[in-house]
Length: 123
Image 1 (cartoon, one colour):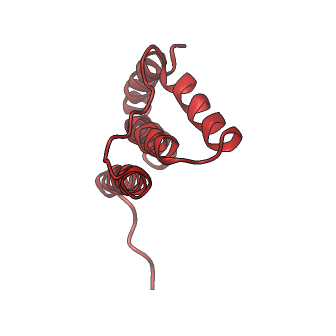
Image 2 (tube, rainbow, N blue to C red):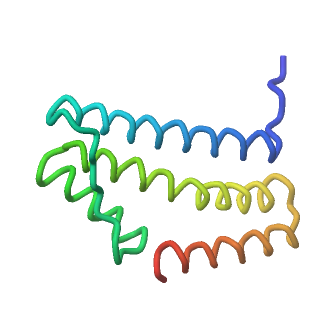
């Protein structure tokens, strides 16, 4: 029996839902962890004056060099949440280019991907 083909709506739904569930799980886990350690829910992730690439590198370095803690976990959740729309548009470009062979939609979606890349990564 053949598996049902993926359509764009299903692909987008899976990407957005997975990104949201992962981000919320990381952030809630960080809040619970912070509460267990200190008795407060305050986690203050550092996000000022950074683009997404700098923020992700900061988060990875913080998690690996200084040891994973509640703030690093919250930073990871925020980074996942910010990456989710980018991954969704990237998947659309691949879908339109490879599966649909639609050059116009691929070009338009590719343009949106470039704009997102400029905004999120400071390219």
